[in-house]
Length: 240
Image (cartoon, rainbow, N blue to C red; front, side, top):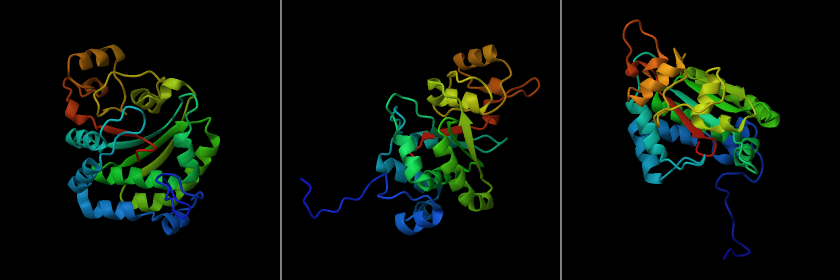
């Protein structure tokens, strides 16, 4: 039982919104996660995530460390990985991701940058619905405060506004929309390789069913190599 004099420390939402990077760093210890990740290195961060037992907070509960490891193991020589923040919640009555973005968008950005540095990614895409006008405006302001630092690491920070459709919140459907296609779930392995041009939908799904990954996403003359397609990490707002 919580006593009258007990101080409760919020785990996710701060007592007051931290809408500037300065306040986030002064009041919420912002920046310490990135500094710790730099000290730990890639292997150390993965070990830390595994020890913490962190799981995806978008619904599936997939172990975060295993997901990041899968992306690392499928890195290709053509282009770095991409980190995508899924903020397209659409379940009836769901408001947790938007609550976090309204109260502390900088924490989400810092978490995504930790992922990008750990996975050697060169792009972070924060994807939400265009109808989330308030959250989108707050996010754009927050991203502007981080772009110089991210740019020094060669990381682009982008906000992406998608459609209202419920299916847009599913990981693979979200990647389809970012690629410029309708929000229709794709057949894909857990590490969600993609964010490239599709040569032919029928051939792509046939290749996946045959166990060849998404090699059809890249046209390389007479040969295709699934290892040449960069992987994509998708995690939920709350996970980051």
